[in-house]
Length: 294
Image 1 (cartoon, rainbow, N blue to C red):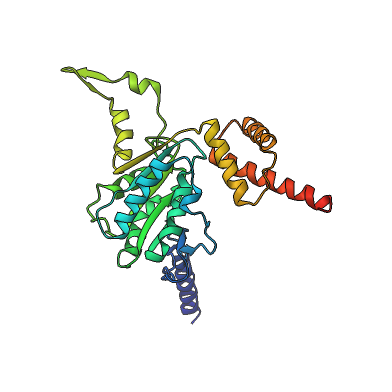
Image 2 (cartoon, rainbow, N blue to C red; image 1 turned 60 degrees about the vertical axis):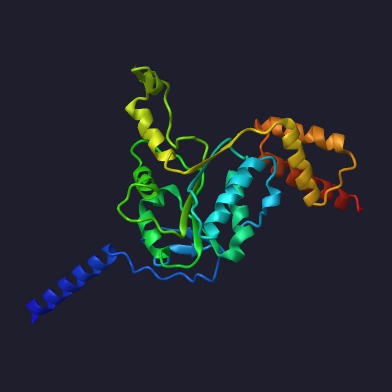
């Protein structure tokens, strides 16, 4: 009996070890509970976490990128209607509205079935799991990866490349990938790689390293480029947000001077900096009014 008890104890211990190694079965999310989700990883019991309070930006709130906004909006409307549409890479200067546009699109078209799933870079290797999960759903899903960049040996790089075009599995018709990045090709670029370009029969052929980097970004069917704002554009965004925050603009010259000083301190005249200044100035104005008993 002692031998049998020892055998049972060892079997129980072995089963416990196996259970710890086997990930729990993923629970089906409540699709009616939210319009935005965050992928937490296949190891979670609830890998798709609802985002209870998504940003309430509207398309009209995104200024000075009218061409990019029009292109992205058109592509998204095609997608929602079930027409052919492209995966999109939004690349360029920081703080110019790349991720804000995607948040605004969600608010614009959530009532028509648009949903967004935020996927961090470390979870890109699990893209097939996400696709399997949403494949049978009637909603239209944008898989959103923000501020994306890779190193050469990053496993997420090949997973994304395969998912965009290259896998044996047919891509779901209800899924697109929208990614933002400060890098056009999502990988660091080195001067010496361009020096390795060669000329064959009058045509320039890039080095294999450059071609490999281009091969990922070119799988996005639509590229949208974002550039630094001019001083006038920056100030127009400042004014827009101050008006939205119902801040008095009686002395615009003072506001203008302070807004430019604020941008100079941060080394950027981006839309993000304009929003930050507007909050700072509006808050200070209200605090001064409150302190003076006005």
